[in-house]
Length: 170
Length: 170
Image 1: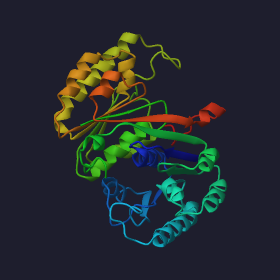
Image 2: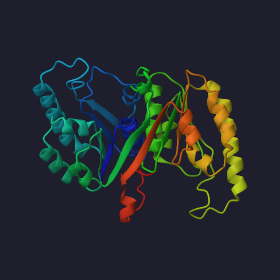
Image 3: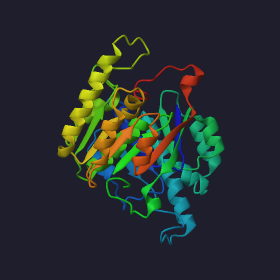
């Protein structure tokens, strides 16, 4: 089963985490693999997930791409996304529930090869759940998915000049 | 800070839970109070949350209202929603982060008095976070909120005749 959580609104990653928590409560083994997000950059949920038996987290990104002071060569972002994707593919056999966090962004930035990701997704066994998050999901991904939610931003305090808040945004 | 998660799509409650997990990881005390959802009806996340120190859950509902075999008098649903709301109000002082799950539904069904809820929300201290979930958020609630996300259903397997799946829907 393929689930896509996309859109420009807040709550995509947290929704996937909540889904993971729900599945964990039903005895499923959960893995979240994060693209873009790097191990140097901790988010509040990381501290809880690392204590949850049966819910694993791999942060495979190198941070924002091309914005906010990023000065890594694009190829390095690509290489790390590709490695992360290969790792996720290899790990799927050990889990029931796989979250590919921000993979939609990695795809739209062309850090990952679309065709490789699509072939992988087509071969996910029926009994496993794979969730793909991130804004700008590609049409081919939406086409392939069983369930697609779009989170729309109706109102956001950033727009009113407030800063990202610890425990809320990260 | 008031956050509203509304819309007809999947992922509102799970997103609020993920937000709660994030806040918990930053040392916040989290309470989720559920309207509509009853203690008799367990969802996967309940089994995880009950083991998390600092994340509490109160299921204060009496189940679906007026559908799916519900035969409780409407007044009983109202009474239980009102009690649950009073409990949430009283508990706020002991928590940093309060999730009022499905309160938007309780409001649109008129299980709760809109004005009472609005006055409470207007008095939430700046440093606390209150999240309101459920489809059909009232315009007055959206107006008052700092951050509003709408989850739109783009594609849902129920529509193709598949049944609700344990660990996914509940």
